Length: 314
Ligand SMILES: Cc1cc2nc3c(=O)[nH]c(=O)nc-3n(C[C@H](O)[C@H](O)[C@H](O)COP(=O)(O)O)c2cc1C
Figure 1 (tube, rainbow, N blue to C red):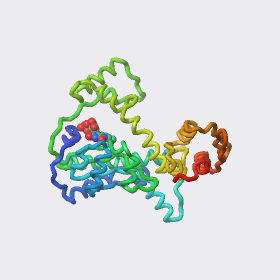
Figure 2: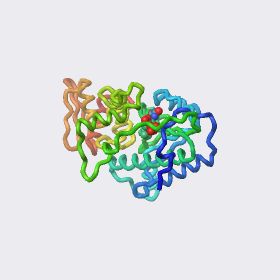
Figure 3: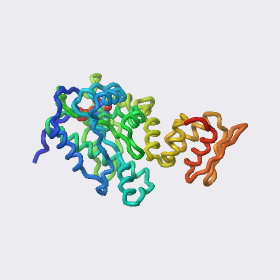
Figure 4: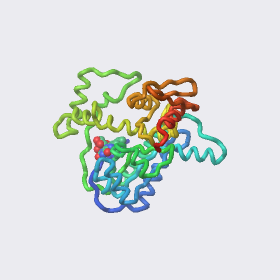
């Protein structure tokens, strides 16, 4: 038995012909996405198909000016989504439990699996695809543009179209570097060197470190995205210690925080001398004033104190 060539020889496609994709093919891809496994049959995801050209252009720009986002026949945005589940429960008189961490985990998984199945189905039909993580550069703006409700977060984009290029498959790490047996095996320095050697052809310079550094090292693209993502996550209701309403209160006052810790950090950096917590209340103080907030969670209490400290904003 052999794995089909479209899987073993696949590569992301970033140049597309202008040809549209027949609606029946789009439908087949979406059917494949829907048939993906999903935790407890909950389907904690949605797929947003972007048809509006102006919106597409804005998303291409927000993704760092990636022209394939604009040129591909289709652009999909898989969404982690617990909004619908909340609505389904409410529709029958139940309410969604409080499990923001696990909700995010399984919603991201469901969205990624549905997206992956859509992409693989498209490739099986001979189309080219490219995931667009660049969409997370400004996930806050993307959320606003797509009018995503609380409980919904974009995970990435996916371009699909008739390929205008046939890129060679890109290298991968040696299998023994990514596959462990029974126990996780730490890496020797030699194995790390081997990994760099295997991945070298990915850049013209032959140095994979350049790519790793650009994205993942200190000062790289991932660090730049992280605070924006943290805020979007809190506003969507997926933060551990800051409910979506508290996050909105802070956000409307330009307090850039995606967690209670970040909110405290911001206040201490902006002239507040102390942030004092007791079980259900908070005082924020500086030399001449103090503000008290009360709430069911420390995040909520802090947001109430911030509202009295900054009454006119928002
Ligand atoms: C989550 C995710 C985000 C990605 N983001 C982008 C992107 O913003 N732009 C792009 O051109 N390629 C993007 N890619 C494609 C990767 O660069 C590509 O999959 C990787 O280099 C391996 O190459 P291959 O898919 O051709 O095997 C992304 C892929 C994934 C899975």
